[in-house]
Length: 130
Image (cartoon, helix red, strand yellow):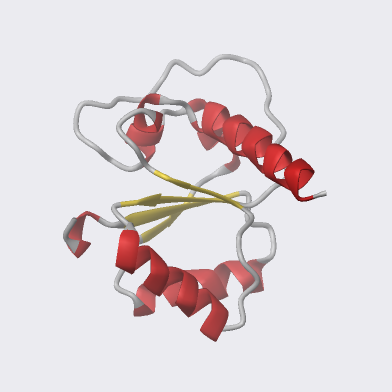
């Protein structure tokens, strides 16, 4: 996939210095970054990425509290993903634990569903390591 279709969404980053470090890292790699507002959990991933064919959802009056940093990467795979992860190591930026690569399936999910799925998978991996 060409670099022009790469994009990163950052969600729930409350440490401004960390957010700036991560944003600068992606800027050096020429990967556009968008910091999502807290209420973005209602929207589909495709909409948040600005992909064609997606429109905003009807906002229901519910709440969703998710206290983990989330990084969603579009178009970053294989050697390019290795390059991104190496850039995090080189810059001594602690990794983002909750991250996802956009797929044809999860692009149709809301950010809330993606967050809950990542949390569940992270829990299973953490449990397996014990």
